[in-house]
Length: 112
Length: 112
Image (cartoon, rainbow over all chains, first blue to last red; front, side):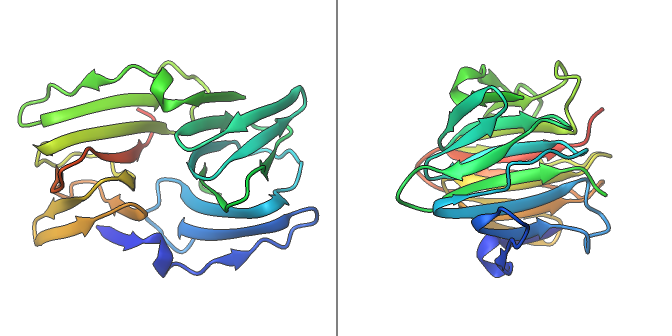
């Protein structure tokens, strides 16, 4: 049983090409051998965004705070607290902050 | 790509023995064949709690709203928004609302 608050977890800059003003906390990550899957909390500052990219693993996302949008190949989808999303493998996607406050969400991915 | 708000999902009573004032929304569930894992949002009314039980599958939990506590075999652990938890398989556990407002959290479980 592990119980912690996200604020106890180091907030790391995401330094991937084309990530702008994005930080990540690995709440349940690779150092946790009991992880069913990985739980990350991302934060995007105003005017920031994650890379517009695709990859093999999917995402399951839940918006916690702020206002944003999801860029897809067919347009933009608004995101606000309580919105959840399933990004399938190889779907092009980027998360963008469209508000004036931090945009925060959970992003869950399969192990490895 | 699926993007929806939790309020679009039916809120169902949890009728398991010993569940008190608990409802659940299956945000990403068994009808979703692309699910990496299942994402459920639970809500416990004031004075309610989930069953105090154990089972084979683990949980990964993230607290969204309200105040509660996690009952374990070694005592109670306070829970507030931004707290995350990993309940291992066969850990005894119950989530309880200790506040005056709804206690809401995400509970992620493996497929099947």
